[in-house]
Amino acid sequence: MPVDPAKLAKLKKLSSKNKTVKVGGKRINKKPTTSATTSASLVESEKIMNIMKAKNGHSLPDVQEINFFCDDGEILHFENTLISKPTVTQSEEGTVTAITNAKYQSKTVTELLPGILKQVGVQNMGLLEKATKELMKRFEATNLKESKQKKSLTEDDDIPFIEEGKTF
Image 1 (spheres, rainbow, N blue to C red):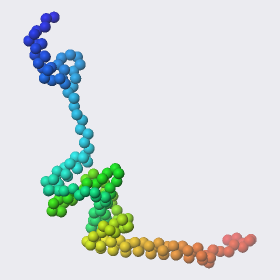
Image 2 (image 1 turned 30 degrees about the vertical axis):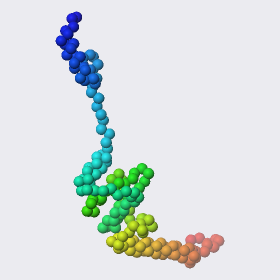
Image 3 (image 1 turned 180 degrees about the horizontal axis):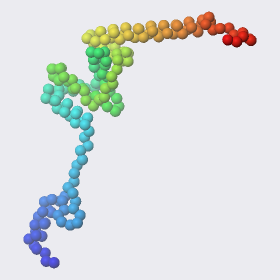
Image 4 (image 1 turned 120 degrees about the vertical axis):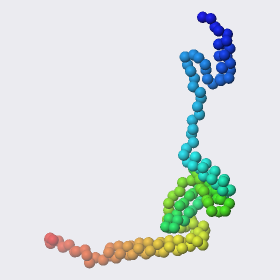
């Protein structure tokens, strides 16, 4: 079988340009592909960070805990853990705050009361007063239940005396 030098030169030229793709032969290697391993949360975080950069956002360093007070008395609680450290970015005007790399828990004021006494500002004192009233009501309700239980245990009027030989 004669070899055409023009075709051979053309094949060498093609193979020197593309070293990842083989020309000819039974086994044709595919071009190497890269798999995308980015998750949806990373994509969302990148979008949020790009928006904050457009608003001249600055990150707040060393944030341990974040609490957002809602109007309905519920609190969105973000906490710094070993697994996730929340990243807080705030716009220059202070109108936009973004929290990324964190999961929140929905809690009430009574659940967070001991830890947030130092953090509550003047604008949230109404919520704190409401929480203390709620705690006092719960405390009084449990005290009433306990006193009723003690009273019912001490009274022997409801328990009949059983005599030998009598039937009911």
